[in-house]
Length: 149
Ligand SMILES: [Cu+2]
Image (cartoon, rainbow, N blue to C red; front, side, top):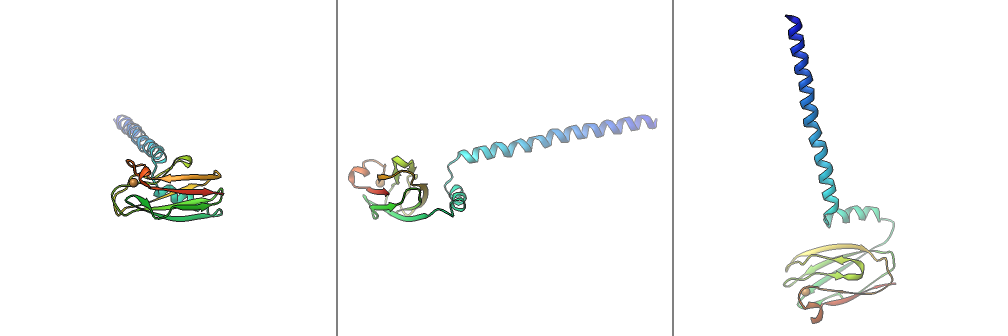
């Protein structure tokens, strides 16, 4: 009789561990896939904070470019090759963005009153045009130049 009870108890314990193992395996897998997704997503605030601390030894050059219809208030940015560049892009009217093709820099199109900060490394020497890629804004004069020396 007590042998049967022992058998049942040990069965329950084994089963319990089995279920626990099965359940505990799931949450272990979930965060890893989430992390993988996070690194793929271009979230501007988190990477900029990470690169900020990583790039404390190299220079960070900060600029503010304000967009209006149809111009940028800053039309020339000058940096040294290898500089970390942080552009605070402000928009004061309608919808605009800030793009530098050669350096793979592109903010999202933001509305009036919005601000987006973008950070990149000026890893090429040259003069690169930055512009707004909305409609024909580039042709209308929404251009400036980034000079990397
Ligand atoms: Cu524009």
